[in-house]
Amino acid sequence: SRPVASATASAAGARLLHSHRHRRRPPSPPLFARRPPSSNFDLDAILAFEEEVKEKERAEAEAKAAAEAKAAAGDWTAEDAEDDRDDDDELSQEEEDVRVYEMTDSEDGMRIDAAIKSFEPELSRSLCGSLVTDGRVEVSGSGIVTRKSHKVSAGDAVTVRHYTEEKPTEIEPEDIPLDVLYEDGHMIVLNKAAGMVVHPAAGNWDGTVVNALAHHLSRVTVHGSGDFVGSDGRVATSGGGSGAEVEVEGTDGEAETFRPGIVHRLDKGTTGVLVVAKTREAHAALSEAFARRRVKKTYVAVAVGNPGRRVTIDRPVGRHPVHRQRMRVVPDPSRRDSVGRRPVPGASPRPPSQAGRRALSYVDTLAFDGRLGVTQVRIETGRTHQIRVHLQDRGTPVYGDDVYGLPDWNKRLAKTRGIERPLLHAARLEMDHPITGEGMVLTAPMPEDMAEQAQAIWPTGREERPDLFGES
Image 1 (cartoon, helix red, strand yellow):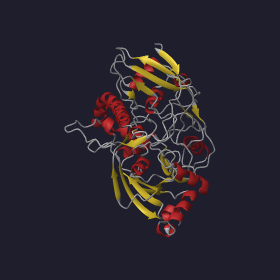
Image 2 (tube, rainbow, N blue to C red; image 1 turned 60 degrees about the vertical axis):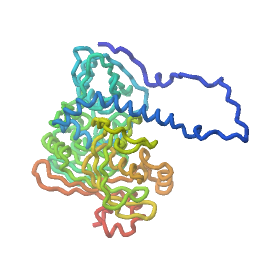
Image 3 (cartoon, helix red, strand yellow; image 1 turned 180 degrees about the vertical axis):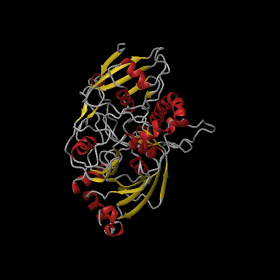
Image 4 (cartoon, rainbow, N blue to C red; image 1 turned 135 degrees about the horizontal axis):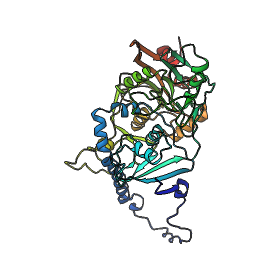
């Protein structure tokens, strides 16, 4: 089948609906006149914007509710495992190849990734799935769809946004230093450095943890390369290569191309404990452990302000309805909205897609100097950007966070310490070994630049919590 329509994002963005170049400016009011307050606070405009946002959420919710209900009934690996893959990579701003397809009776009831492959048979099923989870697919009446289990209907218009940059067919091994905390024949645990993306993706095809692991597992380690990396260090991806795609139970049928062995992720700027499976058996066990919340994860953050002592944050996190690359705490419909309107009595509860998903964080500030706080956060759930969003919602964002933080404070951090990333570190991870079942406690000290900032706030920190500062 051929695309119904084709356009580029750059062309679409170049359309001008109105031109104001030749309009005359209205005469300035007399000096003694005073504009009415409504010109500075337009209540109607605010109400209209909120209705627009709610309508967008409502449209997405109606189309996704059925699929989410099925997933909640038992498809835990398709959703929960994805939630623990917390990656903040932004979509590339390059010109896009946009294709629109109209679903026929043949695709009615078909999964969205399978439907895309039916129109583009040259693409692998795993790549089609990645387009969906990366927010590259939009369905008429539903908005952007990020669940591969979404079912399409005859008559749906499905828009697929491809990157125009050439996608590699192999993961190239790169000799990048790795801080290995633990390794055996089944798994490897790293202290991830700041600035490293976990696995290759659009805009970051090299220089990732996976590229470094391909080199380490094939040429450095004495514990064996495992199932995902060949003796030459190459990991084949869809569309060619020297090896075969590896499918692992618990990944919703998605091949482990471009992210072999990855069971959870850390944001690009986040440092700390990262677990990677080396074998299929370990990958399946670790994926289930993360999805079933059997892994205890503890982070340390430097926050602007004081998040408080022994604070429980139990607020749902969902994708922002307008800024699709950001997450947010979903407003509680039982409370007043931003303009003071009360909830409608008897109103039906929001469907899961509109209400967000439960996110539970336990926050405990270890030290506060009157401006900045060193904060420990233990998370029960693994929603995307959970800690960063929860601390922002509390009014104490992560210091240096360019997405959810405070620009003036971020500039100060860059100027005084040369740090341009969120000061967030995965300090401790408690889990059972995927094969032996032995209990493991994996810890990683803060990187030196973060430790110096933390010590400035907490002078006795090295004595009180040597595990966080790398003191023996």
